[in-house]
Length: 178
Image (cartoon, rainbow, N blue to C red; front, side, top):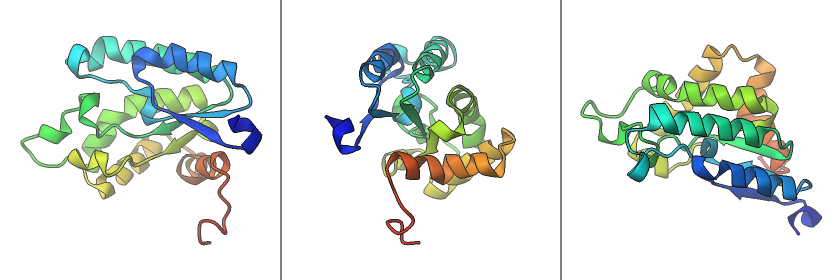
C-alpha cells in the first residue's frame, strides 16, 4: 500500500466525480490524496457554456465535501486547460495578462483555499499543457495577484507556494538545491 511507503496518490477527478474522490480518500485515511487541478470544473462537451452556473455550483459543493476528508490536499492550477472553458486559448486579443487570469481564476481559488486552508493547498503550473492559454510568467504572477487580493499573510503564501508541496512530497531543502 502507498501509506506503507510514505507515498501520495495524485488524483485528477472532474467536478462530477468529487463524491467518489471523497469516498476514496475516506477509505484510505492514512494515504495523502492530492486532488489535482482544483478538482476538475470542466466546461466542455456536455458542460460547454455551463461553467459559471451549473458546473460552478456542483464543483463548489464537491470541493467542500472533499475538504471534510483531512487526508486530501489540493493543487491550485490547471485552469489554462481548454476543457475548463475560460476561453483564453482562443482569445482574439492574444495571451491574457496576469490580471485577466487572476480575475477569472480567483473565485475558484478562493473557494478552495477557504475550504482547505493554505496548509492543504499548493500552487501548480500544469505546464506545458497550460501553455495553450497563457505564458508561464503570467500564470505565476496571476497566482501571486490572487494571493494578494485574498489578503493572505506571508505565512499563508509560504504554505501556498512552497511549504505544503514540500511537506506533502517529503522534499527537503537539500533535495531542492538549497
